[in-house]
Each structure stands twice: as structure tokens, then as C-alpha cells.
Amino acid sequence: MSDQGRNQSDILASYAAGPDRLEAAIAGLFGADLDLALNEDNWSIRQIVHHIADGDDLWKGFVKRAIGDPVGEFTLAWYWQMPQDEWARRWAYQERAIEPSLALFRANRAHIVQLLAHRPEAWSNSLLIRWPGEEAQTSVGWVVAMQARHIDGHVDDIRRIRAAHGK
Image 1 (cartoon, rainbow, N blue to C red):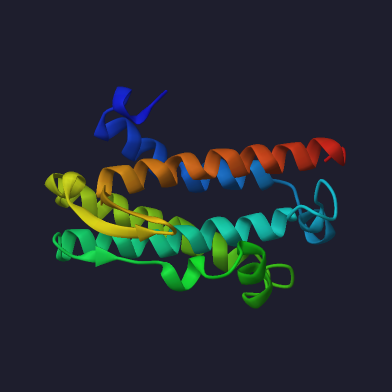
Image 2: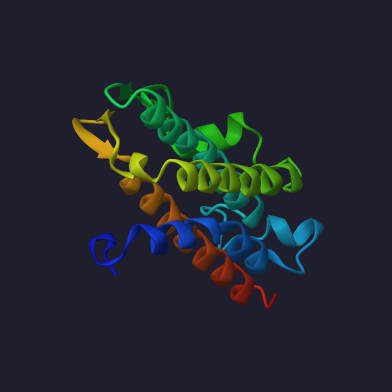
């Protein structure tokens, strides 16, 4: 369903449920199980978990900036200058335990949900984002919906990895 067919409450509920969906997808996996991947060219479950938490943390900054300075600009130019695989390497996704990232993800989502519950009018606040090759006014609602959807694809990736390895 497109975001236009969903209301703010539904999108926010989906966003808030992200940590539960991720934790359900990795339930029962420990140690080396987290290092399973579809193949050597794909990220492992461990790397996916860190990617989800870090991406969410980056976009949390957008939401807070848009609430505090709704005529401003948001940039991730520094992040987009390198492929995500390079960030995964620099941020040691393959070597780190996932528990701190899971806690960060859960805390960030709860923080933003609480903030938007107290400032529901901020849903339509927007900032200029300079994407690679373009720029666009982007709303808080669009970012929250995008992040709510983002986890679904990665949860599907984790399920495919588990199925491929009989886990």
C-alpha cells in the first residue's frame, strides 16, 4: 500500500513496530548464525542489523531537525560519498555484537514516536534534502514512512538467509 493510502497513525504504528519485527526475524540466532549470508556478495544478518540501526539513527537527525528548524536543510552528503559497503567496513559491522545496535534502534524508534505524539503537527514539517543528483523538500511524514518500509525489505532478507541455511 502506498503511503498516500495510509494515515499518520498507521504509518507511525508500523514505524514503532520495527524493532519487534527485527527482533522476531533474528529470534533464536546466536554467534555464527548471525554471520550467515545468502552468498559472499551479500551482507550477513549481523551486518544487516547494524545497517538498520545506523540508518535509523541517521534519519532520526532529520526528524529532530525538521521539528526544531523547519525551514532548514538536511544533508547526508558525507554518507553518500561512499558506498554502503565501505561504511559497513569502517563501522565494523562484521565484527561487532548486535545487542547495542538493537538497543539503539529500539530507543531511537521509541524516542521519535514519543516526540511525534507530542508534536503531531510536525508530520508535515519539511527540510530541503540534497540527494545525489537532485534536491527535494522532504517531510517528516515521508521520512518516517520510508524508515517504516526500510525494515521490511531487510527483514525479508534475513528470512531468506535463514531459509537458505535451514535456520
